[in-house]
Length: 321
Ligand code: GLU
Image (cartoon, rainbow, N blue to C red; front, side):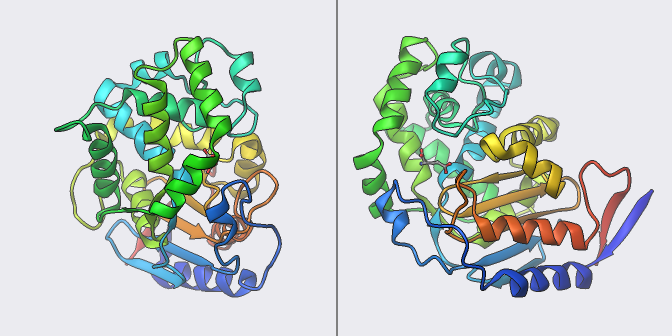
């Protein structure tokens, strides 16, 4: 059965979620990266991008924040495009670790591969696999150009965040050297870690995140530029990665309670993908204990519930404009 949803139903659900949760002060900013600790905790944004490119925005949707772990998704897509899905599976894997994003234990338990490109180990390994374009800054250019294509406009490096993260990323350095020990990194470990740290420090707006979500939900077609960014055939693999590990050790609880594959970052951003229907993003810096934004989770859950949408529901939905 196909269900029709109107733009005004989506708009109402988004505004209602904003009003319901804007004053919620639960959780706290990520403290282990000094820059993130100092972002105003009450910032809050919700954006939905429809397949036509129409945007529904409320709150601080043009505030530039650190993309952090949400950057793992575009780089995983880039590696699929450059090496194919079989190679991604063989060299990195697609298994949820069931452990926190920066777990060393996860690496010791599963020495065969880092598990998935959506945890730190797999994401650093993915950065090592990125093929450069142009000169020596080529790998970085590849990552930034690809993210620009997905969002339809360029992200900008937040220098202060990059320095703050580079000065404190001891755990990620350990992960990178362990990848070397287990032959699971495919270029220089410290250079790959630097690429990863820089991609996490890219500044994006919530609106850009929603457009990226819709590009994925639409099988690689950017709803704003109309450009096909990745082959449509990759879409199920991309969304399956997000569905299986987007919230780290809390992914099962998340998908059970929300019905939408989503990826979070410690900068406070979450992207949600409703395949063939829309992309949604929400941002608010205060996090729960697992590192996922409290208000952004509430916002996505509310919109999905209000519209009676769920990726596992037998009814499919079409947005009528
Ligand atoms: N740059 C962060 C880290 O490596 C990203 C973590 C996250 O957003 O989950 O710790």
